[in-house]
Length: 248
Image (cartoon, rainbow, N blue to C red; front, side, top):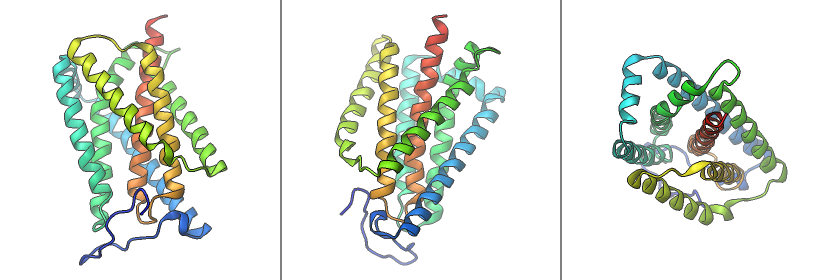
């Protein structure tokens, strides 16, 4: 059974389960990749639109300030985000309902837009005409993403071997983040750079799974996985640019 295979039972009203992408023809694989990246583009566009509305609405800006009110309130926000992310991913991997898959992707995009608000408000504060942090971070993120995607598509290498290392690194990073919030210390710029590298590795991993391990009916789940990795990369690129701006 491949990494993303799920239970293969057919229930009443279930969507048709496709074969693993690695076992399909070139045309079928190309169609799956096209669907995945179209949905990724839609998720990114939805995130940008939501963020624009949220950052230009007084009530949501006040809510974002409340989110930053203290380290324990941010711990609650992180916990809620992790719970919502788990639900969204579970829905996106549904083998019985396409609408539920889309609901999972939409839920995750909304959750990301909400949790990004405090960081982007800080970025706006440090930005200026010659230092548009959010725009620069967005362009940099997409450039890195394009380069990493090109590497995987060109080499066709399977990076699924990275799964264990990424899981351990992710748990370690989360532990450090929680510890920094509880004990009130700063993780510093080196942690930010390390997390950019971590997000880049996840993009390699997720992209190779699209070529080798997803089923052809899992394009919504595949786009959610990629969107999560792109959002993680964007988060830490923004943090890096803020840190560099503060040193000017």
